[in-house]
Length: 512
Image (tube, rainbow, N blue to C red; front, side, top):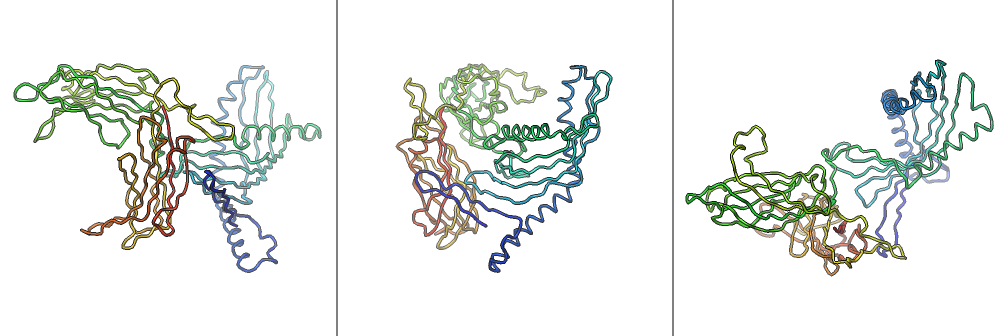
């Protein structure tokens, strides 16, 4: 069955689509042939998943048990030496020959970069887990057996990225209290045979697990780090003031240089930012300000390169230096006097040559976590800066995808974002009416853009044609006042001048 949940357009976007797979053909006699076939295909899909897990289970059993041993080793060790405990270790540890089985699955396709799955899992385990403890030279054995579990978890795969396994984090929570049944033996005696104790233990375990992991509480398991393709989100703004340089190298024929500074943050593909050129000056003063969007202050560095400007030939390099952002304290300005070197190779003999100094001032302003508050109706509103502090920030525009776009001559769509005269474009997707870009653009502004609109237009571009190589497939103008007031919007818009075209856009406003 396919269920589509949505809300009325009162500022709340359409939430998600839910695809529900149910194991079992209920009331098949009263359904027509098409309904029966659809449900029968669903059963086959569930059976395929269960067969896959069954075939993989011997290997999964060993891998999971090895992880359990590694995870519990530090826990066991912390009790050794206390209460007369001399040692704790596993005697037997196996999850048995029977794997968990899926009874049904719901998949939610969100308007976010994530996938939400809600399976119904039953597990009649033949597990055998024994723990041996030596207490005052007396051996104690605890055994867990015949584990039966029924769970309804919610599994969220986010953020979806173009690197295997295509998601950065795995978040798991429970939609309801689990049903757990097991046998528990101590010193060879069946503890769970005591009726009152049996019911109490079952209820307490289910209750504690539910308290820890009941939705919206989650256990988050990182899958990919930042170097594996997971896109990091901006966390603040770096303010750079290039003040001056001292005693630079003489590069011109007349014993002068025409210096300027190029700079960028590591890990970014954005264009370099440059100071102005100071002609015929070995001790130039700039006092020029620049801003960079920071995504990882613990690992990123600011790269600074000094060049001698040349009108015709390639510009000569005067020196360079880097500043790790981890040296900065948030909201505090720090002055750096840098000795310029030829390269960052510590074995480069040219680094011993005096190349002059560069003086810069850096300030890192993290985005405020408290820049949004809720009013009585639950709507977020921006906290106004009554004390005169900076109200600037970063506008993050994510162009996700479009649907049903169509050109008269060709359909090779790309999206163009225009904000305050600054124009940015996505890549071109050839020969499709449903392009998916998932590209994010950043615009730094000095004040909240409450009076601004952002213009997004879908165009088609064809190579090799000297005329009519571009055409518009539709556009949309988005008022940013709601973005500023709510912190973000995530919505699908009907494209103006398009028959059925729609575009999915997410816009965020982060302040410092």
